Length: 457
Image (cartoon, rainbow, N blue to C red; front, top):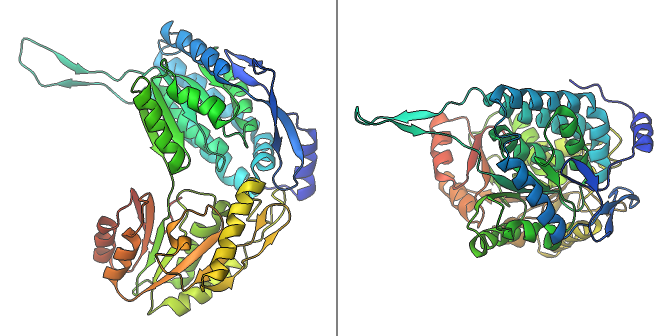
């Protein structure tokens, strides 16, 4: 368990940080070819952290060219598997050595609570990269059964140049989810961080170079979606794109692939995920804690957030009482204060969007049980609305903020019907003491991941 510092100690670390601000291409930090920059802002204070290279299509072309050269000459993909593994393990050690700096930088850039950065994001980043590193020499190819006069082999090979487009809600963790498998496989990469949160990706690229990842293998191109994301998605020499973010943008990447070279596309998009609490759920204190975490963790800026509580009328009163009591312990404020569980919304635009849903909830006739207020510094209090219809925008639209909508049902069948009445299908949670009902519900709910008696992050 990481020992957390005081607010003053984190502030001292923040004051000494000098983050990298230029794109990282072919092993070197470089300004955008245009010379343009954009400001990256601390959402909690509104203060500028740095001016970052505002790259464009010409920078994407250059990065892809260098990634292709690195892939074709085999400097990484032809390296012995044990050597690639050693490099990635060294990268993990360097991340661990610089963990506190990275955590503070992540908190400043994204508004995430420092306690989460220290105890969740950085450890999970290291775990993800090390897991894939260890898999390098443990996943075997296969042979297929054929006649005695032939041999058929299934051989796993790196796909080539991978473009990775990151979200702003988990900058480091999503970077790990993408570079871990791609680098372990021997691919070269061009990574576009979210415009709001570019700083930690640039620092990881610097550490990767120090660990021994060859020039051109891991490139970071900073800038906007239209200027960097679209050219990357449309590039004829990119073999695969992985994107995490909004459903609207995910559709664009499918179109980019269709309009270019039919590159492989891997998407993780939005969610409006149900927490279903059935009438036989036990230990309601534990259930309440899970529901609160599902709704408010990371300020609700989480695609798998459990933003719809679908609760049986028989136990609703007792559960809501516990949820409100639990949620009141979730402090909102300065992200560098480790006593705060909620930090700031990512930027003023998103803050205004979430504020709009608070207003909509108050005007819709729903009952405000908790919160509903915003504060200067892009802060939104944990908010609970009761009496929400599943047809209401609060129940149908991804708010991406700390807003929980409570929907009351009278039966198991109604709970499943309401849970599936959405255009999303990412994640869900079911709370019940009956194992048979749990399995039935997990099969009936149309979601990629269903957890039972817990929230699955």
